[in-house]
Structures are given as C-alpha cells and as structure tokens.
Image (cartoon, rainbow, N blue to C red; front, side):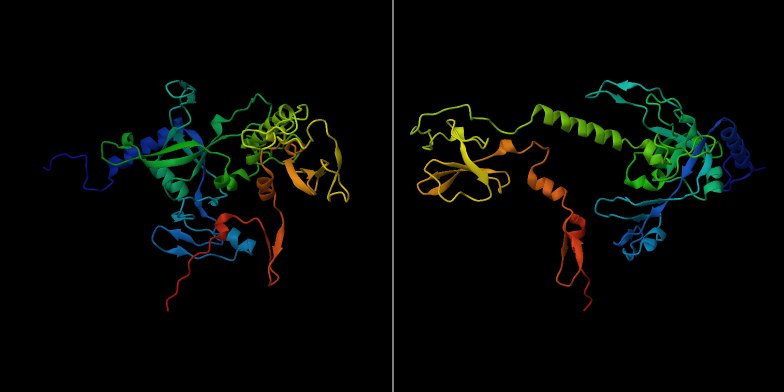
Length: 382
C-alpha cells in the first residue's frame, strides 16, 4: 500500500478540482462585480515600436488616420524605450465582468509624513484564477483597468453626475494565501490604484458615460457626457489657475518702479559716475516734471536740447532724450506693459501658430515638438 500524499506528482487531480470549485463558488456568492477594460497594446504611431523579444514593429504612414487607428502592437511592446512608456494605449471596447474580493479600508490620514496623506488609495483585489482565464482568456496584467460599480458615489456635493471608480493595475501575481492544501494556486492578486484622467487612458475616458440602468448621461448643457468629462479635474484646475492670474493682475497692475514724483539736482552723479540712474527705473516718464514732446514710431525733425520722446515702435516702449545733437536711450517703459505670468519671448513661443513654407513648397508649423526635430540615425549596410 502506497503512502498517502496530497501532492499528486504535478497533476491537478480531483482534490484540486473540488477545492477549486468551492473557491469559485465562494467568489460567486460573496464577491462583488469588477468590470475589466483589457489592455491590448499601443496604437502604432509614425515611429517604430520596440518589442520585448528584440523585434521591431515597423512604423506606419502617419498621414493615414485609418492606418493609425487600425494598427495596434502587442501587449508586450514598448512605445517609448527612452522613458519606458506606453502613452497611446489601446483598450478592448468589450468590457468583461468578473467577481472580486478585497478588503475595504477606512479613509484615514497619515500624520507621520510632511502633510496629511490618505492611506486608502491602493487596493489588493483577489480573483479566482480559473474563472479569470475562462472569461477573459488571459491573466489580468499591468495596464489593465478595473471598474468597481459598488464604489459609485451617487450623491456628490457639487450635484454633478456620479461615476464608477476606476483603478489601474500596477502589479499582478499569485496570492500567497491562495494556495490550497494540494500546493496549487487558485487565486490571482492584483495591486491597483486610482486611474488618473491622463493620455494613457484616453480610450476609456472617451467612452459614453451611462447610469446604472445603462442610459446615457448628459452634462448640464445637455450634451452627451463622456467618462473624461465626469472624471477629469482639468476644467477645475484651469479655473483655479485663471483665478490666481486674475488676482495677481489685480494686486500687481504695473511692473517695476514709478519715479516721476522724484526730483534731483542737475549735475550730480552716482557712485558709478552716471547721472542719477535710479530715476530711470522703468516707468517711461521724464524726471523733474519734464513733459514728452511726443511719442510715435519716428523721432521729430527739429528737437531741442533736453527734449524727451517715447518710441512706441519698440516692445516695450523706450524713452529717449535729445542730448548733444543725438537721441540717447534713457529707459524702457516697463510699467506700460501689463503684467503677465510669462515674458513676451516665452508667450510668443507658446502661442506661435505661424507656418513656414520651405523651398520645395512644403508648409509646416514653426512650433515643432522637440521629439520631432531629432533625426533618427539611418542604417547603411554598404
């Protein structure tokens, strides 16, 4: 008579099947619904995508929008090998429902850090392994998105429409407490955190938002609402930023100093040997109560000694004084320029929508992303 042994030489025998069915029934009875948005790869762009097996998915014609939309790499491909990112992710339009079990934590503050941080933003969800394989055809992997309908917030303080909670999988592996007495694993554990409204999940954020009855949801203006409209805080962030800028402009209307109320004794010099440079601090106003003889794009024809003229064709305007038969630059009228959060060179770069036409007739925008200006090295087999 052979000795008793729970382990059956690497074969999942009847003991394993009995325990597995019991665990599956436990998930079905006591688990909650989890909607899975499966990651399928990245949309193939105009640049090649590098695969983990060493091969390269060739680039496609970027001028053909249908080619970009229909070309998807594998789930193991890396779109950007420099930053190790997959930004343009493709998600399966079909949503799969599985049962999951996890521990819900209270919203506690962690006062041990510099500031207060919530400690319940990361969850460990458990799934029955065989049910997962039979329903979605593979294991839940990093990049998949899990939607939890039971965490839907129906009564928001701002009165807005409610949405389910979305979590992105950060890690996935066999659960240590999911092994039975047969030494076989029955449970798959995933670590997930809240999904941000970022570029990686635009496939999901662009979907139509629906209520628990499956009816489409609308915004306050009556237009159809997407998940991104309800989840993104971009509008609120932009509103706060604009309010901060408006408050700054109200409290700081003009730049630099105002010195027109000061008078000085002619002929005195500063420590640097310059005739009182501090009175030309940037307000574009002549000192000692002197008046401008005019302002415009060109100097007057017959000026007198000591005349002041403001050239408005400069940006900002520049104050000149006629001295010894020539116009001498005195100061820049910084106070005549409205305060802004960026200087004029930066604003001209950010808001540059101009186009340039090359010698061959090709027209392209002047503002080009840095990644597009780098020429990839070619391969010369000769």
